[in-house]
Image (cartoon, rainbow, N blue to C red):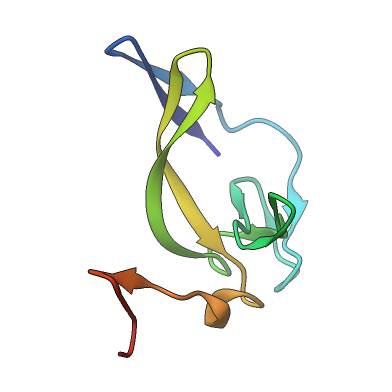
Amino acid sequence: MPCEWYEKDGIVIHVNRGRGGRKQECKFCHSKYSEGKLCDFPIGNGKTCDAAMCNSCARTIGRQNIDIGGGMKRLGDSIDVCPIHRDQVTFVVGGKTKGE
């Protein structure tokens, strides 16, 4: 994640994570990447899949603001799923499940 946005008491904070660090390998296509994502699909007990993947293999299905405690919120955090879980996602819009 190259940068993050936070908010506390109405003040917005930008944190630039830079481009440094070693490259990782995508679990799915095995390409090397420096800016990737973790799968956010819930697997139970409050945990998520967390499979590390490149941006090409990830599917972003939405964005959310997360309360991280101490009055701080992380803004615009992406919700991403891996190739294994992308067909298991259910969307509910206006009280109806996608496809109803």
